[in-house]
Picture 1 (spheres, rainbow, N blue to C red):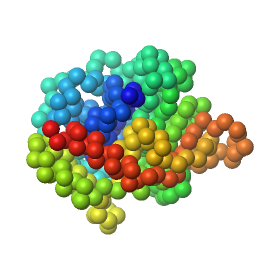
Picture 2 (picture 1 turned 135 degrees about the vertical axis):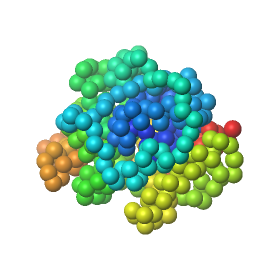
Picture 3 (picture 1 turned 90 degrees about the horizontal axis):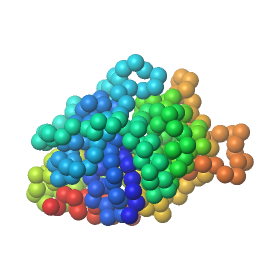
Picture 4 (picture 1 turned 30 degrees about the vertical axis):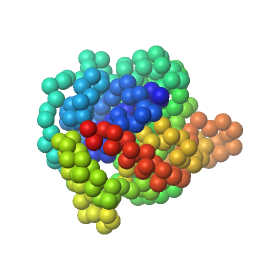
Length: 315
């Protein structure tokens, strides 16, 4: 069983990624770290704790992380993010508030301590801005080098971005942190829009969740329906991309993706701030530390995802 830590900014697809990880028989989720992004840090942490309470995972530790990017003095939520994820980040559904608080240890120290403790047994899965990871790397780079792999949902190498024509949301939210991590020598796997926009969940699948008729399944189905609506309004198609769950899926089932080994650069200048691209000067490097996912077996992934969701929702 693969030990993993999820680093999340709990909006709707983060919530689905958390549930998927809990329901996946191959995953041993040892903790969740939170950050800003889809929503502010406080609400992202609350959403995470409330979601864990909803599915009875009341012992899984949650560690509060960064409140804003490395280059900003405060977090300002993008208007488009409110439309995609709702005012509360989880499709405006109302679920019972958890009485739990996050752990006293902060997210950065938990990442470092876990990397040292578990080493190659551990994968980090980061599905929000990379601020927590960048702080951890700056504080103890040798610790993060010990983990098996860091899987990042972020970027757009072969397709346009979803915030600007160049940049994907998680990367542009903290481009400085992204540059720190993506231009490091850490063992990275990038799960970007190149593959996440190929993994579409539709109402055909979520109809099953409504049929389970539990408090949990009803809430998650309602949340996902909100996500469907936002995709329909913005992009005009039926269904939603499983951005963050796919990062979990590829971390647990590497055979799902074809990858390109490549050293990356992150641009910090406008108008292409947040753009990731191959490092021209290192094209002949024989040992790139980053794998970029360029193809995915979306049908096989969806089968894994739906089975894991059944495991967690149909109880």
